[in-house]
Length: 361
Image (cartoon, rainbow, N blue to C red; front, side, top):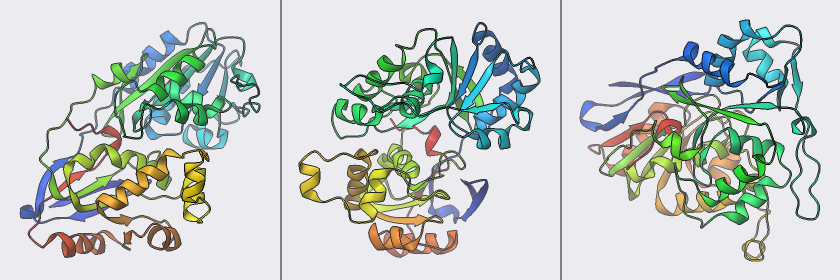
């Protein structure tokens, strides 16, 4: 059986014999971009700026559908952390996207905001996804992480524990939401996807998002294949790591996990960069050392301790096999061979093509 997993801008082909396939979770695309644009236009009434938090395919598709209605008199300004990435994805916005300034360094424990967000009325747009720390990474959390000084440290300190949580309103999420909602007149829109296509537009957070997820019942198998979701979801190893945790109930403890994702932008978080270079010691961790993404060190350690991991990516061998001690492969056939060498030729493997759309009961 041929199974295509999103891999960056393309797809990676996995070929499994029918007797080796356990459960296949492969969402069928369902696009409602036209309807979402009408909702977007209605909710944006009275806003003088649009802040786009990511360049994920669903975000770009909605904006491309909306672009013909974009005010040409410059009455509305568009901001993004990466203007070029947004303009490359939506040609109609070329030359119209401004760079969102980083927030000032916080002092005296008070949050600081990117100056463009203060005053006026903003519409915040992002594509959502499950997240182990925030429960659901929506427009509120995305804005907080990109435009609020000290947000990541504050969220990490506010966490209720180190165990991953998905589609719940976690303490870390509640903190970020309370901080960004101090920005008066801010309106939030979070795109929910199905099969990578824009399905719905939410105003609320994790609780509202949960209604769009169908919790899957699955008996753990000997092996598990996880695709993060392609471009926008597998750009860094940090992103793949966070998303992979949502599917781990589908594999037995000590079983084999094959992670599939491009990692074109490398490791991702500061914490993983430091871990990969051997710059984070156990004593430093015990003393409360912090770097952005610190929770990912625990996620990585747990993954390595509890499972045998094979990584199919473009991540350099220095990190993947050298520092993280993963098995690696140059192609999908080699990756599957390594999994079967461990699980046995007759093992059943569950496959999740898009962890970014997955929720296990």
